[in-house]
Amino acid sequence: MNRIDAPKGVKEYLPPESATFLAVRDALSAPAIAAGYGYVELPTFEHTELFVRGVGESTDVVSKEMYTFDDRGGRSMSLRPEGTAGVMRAVIEHGLDRGALPIKLWYAGPFFRGESPQLGRYRQFFQVGVEAIGVDDPALDAEVITIGDDGFRSLGLTDFTLEITSLGDAKCRPVYRQKLIAFLDTLDLDEATRARAQVNPLRVLDDKRTEVRRQLAGAPLMVDHLCAECADHFAAVRAYLDALRVHYTLNPHLVRGLDYYTKTTFEFVHHGLGSQSGIGGGGRYDGLMGELGGQALSGIGFGLGIDRTVLACHAEGRVVGVAPRVSVFFVPLGDAARVESIATMGKLRRAGVHADLAYGTIGLKGAMKAADRSGATYAVVIGDRDLQAGVAQVKDLMSGEQSAVALTDLVATLKEKFL
Ligand code: HAM
Image 1: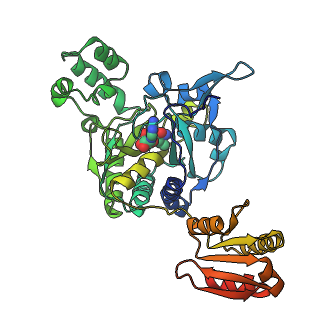
Image 2: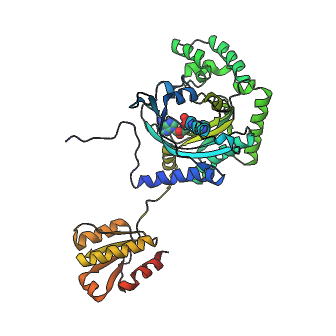
Image 3: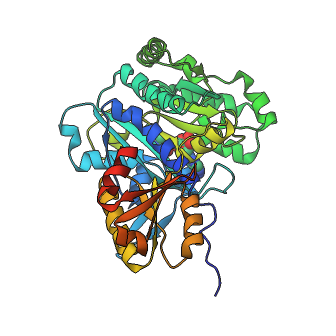
């Protein structure tokens, strides 16, 4: 029979690396939990329309990368390429916006984008995200950014930069956009770039080609064209970040791949990851709720890439998350001893001691090898003769020392060693 492999470009985590994955996921979410964010578990597929309206039809994410299919009822569905649109949909659908504001939510899970795979860029990848909805307070922007920064730092990561900028709002951005289009019109650009300049001129600012970069040197920048309200907002965000001692770099060229952003936007860029260096990013999206049929509430959030953060930990030599090992390994020799071992192991596990047993018929030698491989501190060997004597042989697998312990005392003795 042919072997069936996983689809191209999906990332999987197996032991022992999966321990790092879990530790990274938990470390990135801990600061959100500590700041009062509540967990949401949302569907991995939604009506395609949600992403078309929410993320933006002209974005690469929606126009080129979505996994879209008709469900059995002929409705167009898409695997979620990101989390914000789904959170907004849930907030509106369940009326969370009629309760106390801000609504603070976090999530973690898989997301799907049909990009060309490479190290750090996958078709199924994982994010931890937060969204804070309903209060347009620059202190909330600073809170969200700090949660991201704290998450990375709690993993011991230091070789990254937090880049921030402001993209303005519905008042000042259209004015700036026209100015930028007029500027781009004067440049010597190829046809495709010219077309892009008409649809999304801001994205041209992100062009990586040197001949384009050179011409962009004198381009007007959004940060220099913010209206008074947006400029004040951005200044306040920076002041709060300073107060929180969160270091950032102003990057007026910062362009995000999703259309909903307004005002504060940011990205965490790691310096040890090559081209897929964005380990997290986010920003404000003040028009999004209204766009999705809800009240006109503001919002800010981020998505942190778990996969890239795992790579960043490797790049910085941070050992994060150790695969859990059992403490006690049972080696029963004979059928009656096996029943006794299984019963004792059950009691130990329920008491909170991690324990495993030599399954199958592998003999004493094989079973002791399995005990060593398990990383357990103690092996508990029970033979039929031990059983008759009412004892078990408890062997310290490091020192090799062995002692007989009465079966009646076994659970209490082992519990004492570990709890
Ligand atoms: P995003 O920048 O598209 O933002 O994704 C966030 C993070 O997910 C990226 O910084 C990166 O670490 C990771 N990521 C994205 N695509 C891939 C991929 N193909 N393979 C591996 N990792 C990837 C968002 O998704 C927004 N929803 C964030 C947000 C929340 N903004 C406001 N609220």
